[in-house]
Length: 229
Image 1 (tube, rainbow, N blue to C red):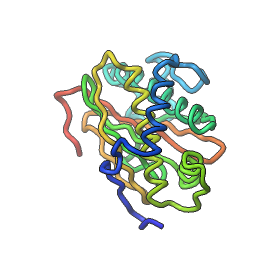
Image 2 (cartoon, one colour; image 1 turned 30 degrees about the vertical axis):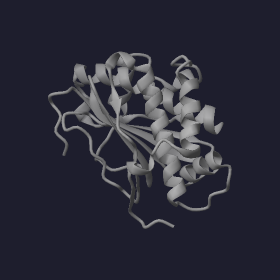
Image 3 (cartoon, rainbow, N blue to C red; image 1 turned 60 degrees about the horizontal axis):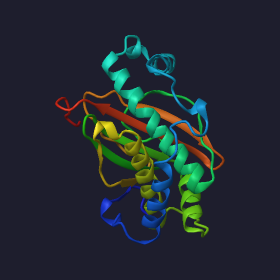
Image 4 (tube, rainbow, N blue to C red; image 1 turned 45 degrees about the horizontal axis):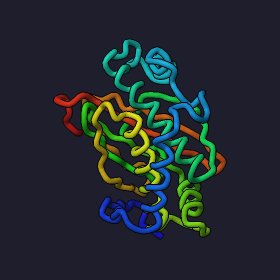
């Protein structure tokens, strides 16, 4: 059992072993899939759609959204959602359902286990895949084909790999933006603090599945205006 607040670094993501083989197999399949191959209501139809969702679910700070923010986010968010759907359906045989969207009121992870990847290129930002303990344990159990009962290094490893697959799929769908993704880090603990570019407008997109609750927490900004806080 890991301590209440643990960090799993990128050093274990060494490109070898079972997880790496699964990732390469999945990524080769995902590159060939269309963006909305599964459930259309997971996605946002256009910039106005995402502005409307944020405005309806967040406080007064969103009453006049920055148009540059809305454009960059709708362009990048749908491929990340697609990556999540692709990875869960294709690798884990588990359907996810989007349950909402809103601006983040603070920089805290929504769930105890969070895979984190940094994005750089024509946009700079952070993508977080945050899972309840029940989801992360089922993810690891399915990937390893062995029943896991608690959060340990294998579960953290599996969450890192799924996060890597989600962002790798999104990167493939956004090749025109020349993006690079970091290796994943995984945090375990209650109310872990996340870091996003200062000038971004981080949003939270909660999902549910048969195993429990999970969420994407995403913040992007333009190069030249980035300073982490």
